[in-house]
Amino acid sequence: MQFDVKIRKVIENGKPLKALASVTVDGSFTIHNVRVIKTENAQFVAMPYATFKDADGKDVRRDIVHPIKSEVRKSLEAAVFAAYEQKLAEKAE
Image (cartoon, rainbow, N blue to C red):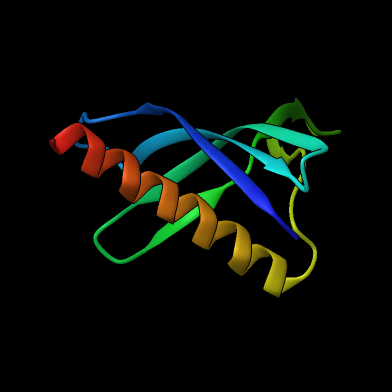
């Protein structure tokens, strides 16, 4: 599976959300609003989500899309992190 990642926005406000990306899968399907999250303890990729109310009226967030297989998630994360690091390096120049 091929991932083409474009970092759309780098966020530098001291909060865990570091970037927003678009990921094209195998040149045929694009996922927008993929988030790069970085805390002191972890770094991960968060998929786009929708918020809705459940039967009890509580707000619930659900991923709109997400990898099912762990190896696909690892490949996706590696591609997003590589693009993020490259974007940071370009900004530093």
